[in-house]
Length: 205
Image (cartoon, rainbow, N blue to C red; front, side, top):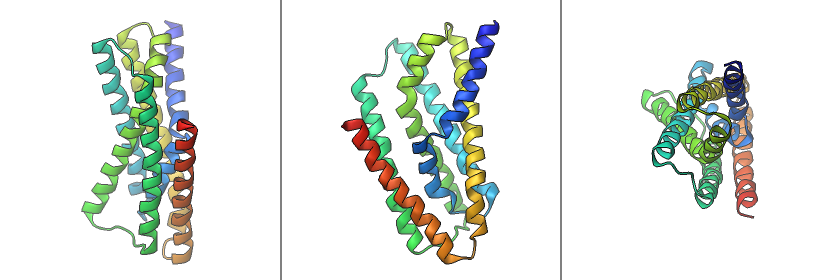
């Protein structure tokens, strides 16, 4: 019982650490500055984590029912999709930074939240193969696997939530200062595009 409790605790810590992996934080970084409010920016991290966790859970349940694993070719495809998404987010953010204005309408805010959740789902899909292998090798029962994914998910949600709150601070400070704000958006865009290209090269090469 103690070993299981320890493993589940590790799941939470790994989830927190997992949220802060470069491809995750870079993707969310392209959107955080589109709100003046730290609270509203934090919702992006919250829903990224929810999307990520839901995908891991759904994929695990499907693989458990079908008693199979994700083929290596599929896993590589998912990873390449992440790279392409980073490139797209970079160009999208760069285009928006040219005519920067803070989104104020409710529809735009909802769009950003759904977009962040979708990004989390893509990242969850890319990481589902590794998570499944981890559960098969370390957790013996189906119920423990579900609890592990749940705690891992809570860790990722909290980790990304903390990150978005911290990242929103420089954007809030630069509010009303066009040049500084434009620089932050441009930097996030360039980093996202560059990392996306490198990510695809590392996976496919």
